[in-house]
Structures are given as structure tokens and as C-alpha cells.
Length: 259
Image (cartoon, rainbow, N blue to C red; front, side, top):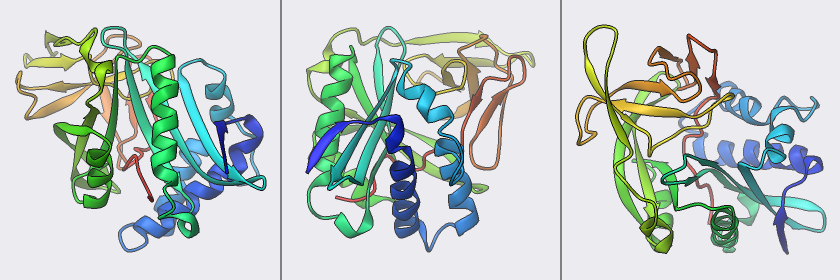
């Protein structure tokens, strides 16, 4: 078993693992077409050029670790770095091929991607799981993560609660701050922009906006590329900024599939 940084030639294997893992985890929740749309938004269509992921592997902000055995991709972890103070390493996906779950691969992938994010200057590391995914939450808690906040996200048109968990190691001690700004919207609403939370966009990060300092009720999203609050959200929680067309792909749902 070998764990290493992903290469462009690994993308077909990564896509295959994501397809199989999502099917095993969400077969009774989401139809095949919805799952396929999500995978294609992240990794391209089957047989297509590598595209976006290939570019991200070279951008210095994206980290992808694969687990392979006899040249077969068995699992992968994907994360990106955003922000300056604090600099956050956000785990986006952690998939293990269904037939190889229960072998400790997820733990090994998590450990390796945490180290890679720390090496690239992360002050803290975050992961998100759907509230109903008790196994996913337990996985991160077993590895020292604590619940930080909850927000509502959309999966195939349904609103569900998503938990953000933060690693408890010393990465979070340096550079942490409130990371917020109050801003008045065009309709006179005062919102709080949470710069210390982020989602990857095509041109820059998106930050959630809230109606209160406790972050209990989300208002919408702020575009970190052009500083706009005019961000629309689609049926699979994909974002697009109306001012600069910065985009976020379909949401990743959970950051862990398989032990």
C-alpha cells in the first residue's frame, strides 16, 4: 500500500473511486443521475479531458492524496487552502473504494492530508459532514475534531444540516481570530461576513454571511473574488456570483466515506 500526492494520470481512478463510494453511501438517498452530476462537476465526465482538477493539482492551494495498491487507486483525500489569518485547510472529499473499507485507509489518508496541509501553512484544518452522517462525525471526533458550527445546505433541492468540525491540534492556536465583518446589503439588511469560513470558488473563495454574530442564521454568501454579496445558489448548492461569475461546483456533501 502506497500513499502519495496525486498526479494528473490518477484522475480517472479518482473519479471511479468517487463514483463507487458515493453510490455505496447514498444509494438510498440520491438517484444515480444526481450523484453523477456531482462527480462530473468535480472530476469531469468519463473519458473527458482531465480539465479543472488537473489545473488545481498545480495551483499550490489544492492537496490531493491517493492510496494505491498494484497501480489501482483505492481511496483519496482532497483539500484546499484558503484565507490568510487564519489560513484554513478545508478537507473537501475523503473516499475509500467500498470493497476496501474497514481497513484503516480513511485514517491513513486523513493523517497524510493533515500533514500536507500543515506543511503548506495551514493554521487550522476543517472538515464537514451532514448531521445525519453519524459515522462520519464519529470518524472525525475519534481523530480529535470538535464541532465548531452548523449551517443549512441544499442537497438535490432538500435543506439539510451540515456540521463543520475543526481539528484540535496546535495548528489552530496561531493566527486564529474572529475573522468577521459587518456589512449592509443592498436591501438594508446588516449581515456578518465570516472570512474564517470559506468554500472554494473558480476565481476566489466564497464566505458565508450570517444575520447575527453567533452565526445561527445564515443570510447568504460573499464572493471573495470581487467582494460582492450578490451570489445565487442552485439546487445542489452550487454558487455563482452575479457580478464576476465566480463559481463553486456542486457541494461535496460529506468529507468522509469509508473507514
